[in-house]
Image 1 (spheres, rainbow, N blue to C red):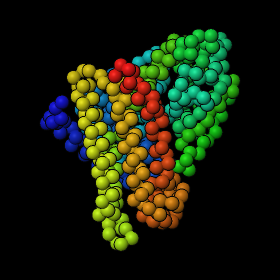
Image 2 (image 1 turned 45 degrees about the vertical axis):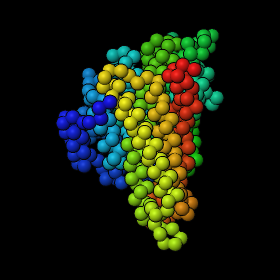
Image 3 (image 1 turned 135 degrees about the horizontal axis):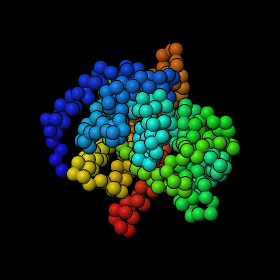
Length: 399
């Protein structure tokens, strides 16, 4: 594996840095919380700037508006974005349903949907999980019965991130109850304004509103909104899940968090007045996490090198998801410890960006408990770590 960057790659890194310094809105770069008020408007402006530069769809083919970058350029871009604390754009359109549409959709569907995904004018959410159908997604029960040129959809989806803000939802629905579970599923695109759709909020453990239940009662969906063939939705769902897990290790983000924790450790004082950075136990734990992250980073670089050589990583990339989420959770735990008693107040107005008075304690302490609580789900969403270990055991080790 050659990890030395070429002159072209170094020039590209410099170009990315210049763009970020000129275009990234300050309110996004300085944001250290989730669920901030007005976030969608700021994200849309940032996405439009990226779109005008031609950098919004990092992994899309160039003919559909993508970048055409090499795997190393993608890696550099993601590193620089994380280092600048640039927010990740909503993945549901760009990383999930967009690739499904340009790969399996017809020309009318591409024309209708791809442009809005690229500009950020149309937001999407994902209708996969149901009560009792999470990791065992093939057991889903939401039904779509065909009546002429429409389907009538009835059922429920759950844990639907940002459904309350989405314009469209892509759904897995059961169109044949007599077939084997994976063979009776279809993939539908549904306008969230369609009569019969009801969205109910789920307030998660961090105290904020990211998640929802979505109920479908006699929702009328045109057959023309189906992707590909009827009862072949499982094929498209598996394709989408590969894209969903891309970059889920979060190596650049974790590197930035380690640097941030080192800065906090120099500022925080213990009972005897000494800096937290002089506390051996705390700094040893931070160093151990950094060592683990370094190993993860080099594993990630090996996968990048494989892609450069034209060899997809395949199921071995499940390692990135497992170790990446373990590192994220360990760092969030240390952040709570560093903030000490200032991590205790629940300052919802500050988390949402609508407070009109100073926070209790330092600004960096406002979100640490909320981030820790929400981060407990990182080892579950995107394919639980237990499932990822099964994938490695079966597909990599041949057990």
